[in-house]
Length: 65
Image 1: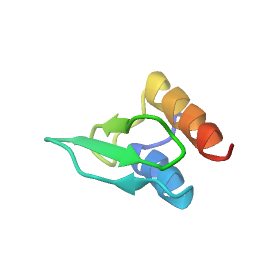
Image 2 (image 1 turned 90 degrees about the vertical axis):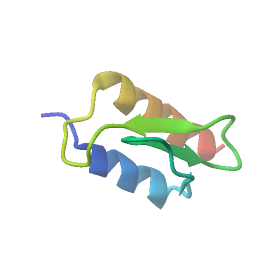
Image 3 (image 1 turned 45 degrees about the vertical axis):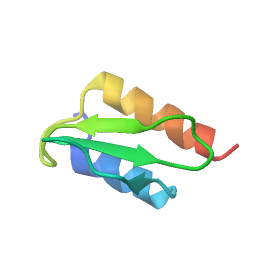
């Protein structure tokens, strides 16, 4: 079962990403060590899509460098 959107958001915030808001159900997370925003869309209780999971994992790894 895929993680929920809220779990991806929690993981990003634990790694130091800051939610700079967005439009509608979109949220833009920024980190000083990551180029560009990580955009997460969807309601918190919905299942995350595979591309969202991949993007969050890559961004978290990039932030640790």
